[in-house]
Amino acid sequence: MSVQIWTFIFVFLSFSLYIGIAIWSRAKSTSEFYVAGAGVPPLANGMATAADWMSAASFISMAGLISFLGRDGTFYLMGWTGGYVLLALLLAPYLRKFGKFTVPDFIGDRYYSRSARLIAVFCAITISFVYVCGQMQGAGIVFSRFLEVDITTGVIIGMTIVFFYAVMGGMKGITYTQVAQYCVLIFAFMVPAIFISILMTGIPIPQLGFGAELTDAYGGGYLLDQLDGLSEQLGFATYTEGQRTTQDVFFITAALMFGTAGLPHVIIRFFTVPNVRDARRSAGFALIFIAILYTTAPTVAAFARTNLINTVNNAEYSAMPEWFSKWETTNLISFNDKNNDGRIQYLGDAERNELEVNQDIMVLANPEIAGLPNWVVALVAAGALAAALSTAAGLLLVISTSVAHDLLKRSFLPSITEKQELLCARCAIFVAVLVAGYVGINPPAYVAQVVAYAFGLAAASFFPAIVLGIFHKRMNKDGAIAGMLVGFIFTASYIIYFKTINPAADNAAGWWLGISPEGIGALGTLANLLVAYSVAKFTPAPPKDVQAIVENIRLPGEAVAR
Image (cartoon, rainbow, N blue to C red; front, side):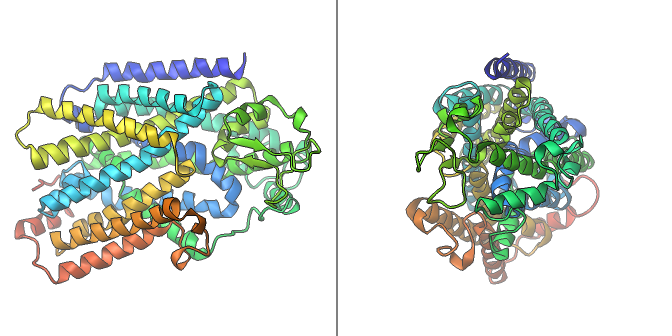
């Protein structure tokens, strides 16, 4: 069977499963809608957390970026995994104990301020919108290639599916849907990785294949040595040598790390389990599930880059395999025969290079480039959709929760009934899907880059407020509000300037202090901390009952929130 038929089969079966779970687990109360009734087992929650966190950026884009960036791409690995460890071990147990399942709710109560709550709501919605746009973009890329529809249609299909099960089941439906999606995405990521590792190195474990020698059919020698040689031969930067400054790599890693620890859709996961102990257990399970993909991604990146160069460079354009023309129709691969010789010149020299490859296609195209069976190619498509839609659903829930619970119920309309609150939450998801779909159709950058901007904004706004709220009982509302405003505005302005106002200056020479837009969130975090601490020092201390709660959440056992 063709790739398209296999894709239809896998997508139909997986989507039917997701919709079936949503119908089975339909939320009937706000507790079920927001936190799944706090009754999810730790193992299931760990799996759902992994699926929620490993978005289209992890599945589709990360390995692709690493395949082009080489060593520099490791800041995605270090930042995202390091941030999750920071969240799981340092912050999540305390937030779970505080008892507030949304970041705006925590900030509003911890800093005893309606203004702080409203600022946090605005930040949560903005961050989630930026993040979810990347997921819609990823879904559009998959549909456009494998179902042979345009990206706009692909995004609309993804919007429709995720809207249905997010509205129907809320967190309860999303959680159990994400358990299924994790199984699909990890199977889809690992099967081709194992196949290609066996073909290229004879070793069935991709993590070991990364440092192994290639088989004779692939030229022999160590994988990274050959990739370095091919890169240098064609005028690309050496794969194992970094091109970005150490300073920029540090700031990007820090921004991704702090942003991960402040992401609202990940934090809320720790409230779907019965108690603090189960929250810690689910965090451990999630880390194991995440590690499976993240330790495999560098190998997939190296395999994909090697196979791409060997397949396309100096090859007859008319003799290119079917996958090449299929990706051409999506405009994610483009060939311009500058010397009219009918051959593809894939070179590092921009003046002579004839091939442009979108980095987001590398994982999706990798099985085809390696000549794997059609069912494996289709399986990867289903896995990519699972990754994109799982995270999109979690983010949409954050948006709906911020609007219905934090903005309406806790701020402007405290007297609304539970039924009205649930309706408002569902309406918020509808509006969020439309906005996310539009931006997904008109993306500002690669999927992983868009996601990196969301992490930077989360780092600059939420991370200091959460950390200081837990560990510094003297931190007051004035400091928190000032810090969040400064951090968010500074980071957002920097990103907007280089991505929309003056994109021509978006290079190392134009960046302030040599820090890229992907890394500016780390500087925004520092600005937030300094401003918050300084303002708090010269303004009244928090009420005694708030300080007592801060002391209480550090003690073992279940705490009673304010």
